[in-house]
Length: 93
Image 1 (spheres, helix red, strand yellow):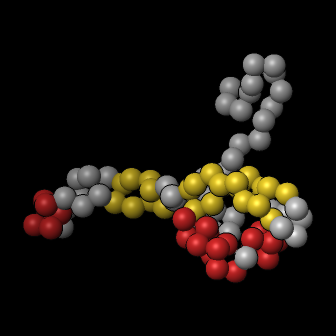
Image 2: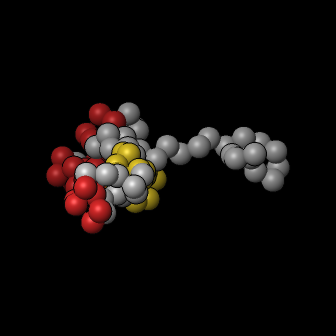
């Protein structure tokens, strides 16, 4: 079963979403040359995931390091506005 470890305890699943930038997966269609010619969509849909990066961020106000999964846009926001303020607004600290 997903989330089970070898010792039988349940571990929480990490959502594929950025808590800072509120980016999550999107469903989009592929686009083929036939679509351009006839407006017929033979390709179906595709789920696009956000660009999540696992980061260790030092928060000087707390004097500790926090591990977070952020999108690249969320990481740029964190760099611009400061770690403590951004993570507090996202509910991570």
